[in-house]
Length: 339
Ligand code: WQD
Image 1 (tube, helix red, strand yellow):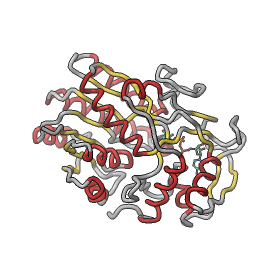
Image 2: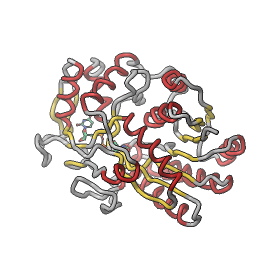
Image 3: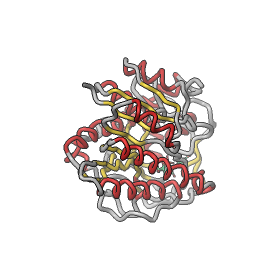
C-alpha cells in the first residue's frame, strides 16, 4: 500500500516542489492549504510535472474542525508541516498575527495527530533559529536570539514539537532547518511566486534580469566577507524537496526529535549570485549599492554533516543550475501561477 503524506502548506514554494518529489516517489499526497500566500493554480502544475494527481483541501491549519475532517477521511502515515506565515519584515510589523497563526497551526496539527494516532512529523524550520554564530553552523550551535517574530515562531514550534515527541515513545519528528532555498523545478513549470515585491534576493534578481525592475539594490557592501556583500547558503529547492523525502525514510526507522540542517555547506555573496545569474542566463543584472538591511548578518552557511550521515542526503545542484532553473520559471510564468 502506498504511504499517504499530509502536506500542510503544500501549495507554497517549497511545499509544491516537495509534493512533486513525493508523488514521483510513489507517495499519495494530501495538501491542506488556506491559499493565503499561494494560488490554486499551482495544483495543476504539480500534477502535470509529477504525472499523478493529488488531493487538495482548502483548509486553514488553525481550524481544528476542518483539519480533523482530513484525518477522519484518510489513513495518514506522516505529516510534513510547511503551513505558516514567513515574511520576516511583515512579522516585525504584525507580531501577534504571526505568533497566533504559526503557533496555533503547529498546536492544532499536533492535537489532530495525537487524536488520530499519527506519529511521524517533518517540520519546516529555518536557520533563523540559530543565534548569531560563526559559520559553518552545526545543529548544536546556540539557538535563540532571533531577530524577528517569524524566527521566534520557528524556534517556539521546534520546542513544542520536541516536547510532543518526547512524551510518546512511538513518535518521531525531524526539524528541518533550511538555509536559503532558491531556484525552481527544472521544467520551468514550478517556481517561487512571491506576491508583490519580493523581500528575498533571488526572486528580485530574477525580475531585474527579466526587465521587470530597473536594478537590484545590494543591501550593503561593507560586511566582513570576501567582497563586502552578504554571504548565504543557497540551496536548490529541488534538493531541499529531496531532503524531505529522505527525512520520511528516517522517520520510519527512528523515534524522538532531532534537528537537521538542509544546506549546501558553502556560502555565496550577493554579488556572487548576481554574477552567477548573469553567466547562467546571459542577461545583465544591474545593481546599485544601498544601505544595510537591519537584522542582516555578514555570513551564514550550514554544516550539512548530519543530513549526510542520518538522511544519506547531500545537495547536488550548483548555483548555476539554481539560476538557470529560476530564470526558466521566470520567463515562462512572469506573472506566476494562474489565480
Ligand atoms: C539574502 C542576501 C541580503 C534582497 C531570509 C529569511 C530566512 C529564510 C530565507 C524563511 C542578504 C541580500 C536581499 C535584496 C539584497 N526564510 N539582499 N537585496 O535574509 O538570508 O533569509 O530568507 O525561512 O528566514 O530571513 O534571505 O534573500 O532576504 O537575503 O542585497 O533586494 O541578499 O542583505 O545578504 P535571508 P534574503
